[in-house]
Length: 94
Image (cartoon, rainbow, N blue to C red; front, top):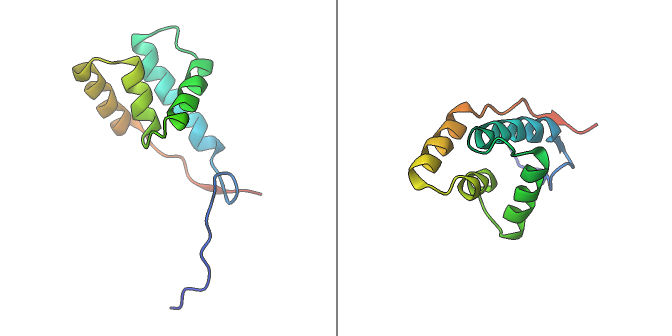
């Protein structure tokens, strides 16, 4: 088989990631909300923006660490995040 094309998705160009972003947001808000009941979707957006500006390779691990800075408890929540996260099926943009 000859490789003829390579498609690069810069986010929202080929794949519709809106379902993915909503699901992962609900999971993070739920986890952080167990420790900080007032944690909101606005807080999540602010944390994501901060992580991007800091060039964090693992945005959601950064958020968990920022909001749960005790190493032992953070590790428990990070492990739960990794176990509970189920990526929704990928969809193509219309």
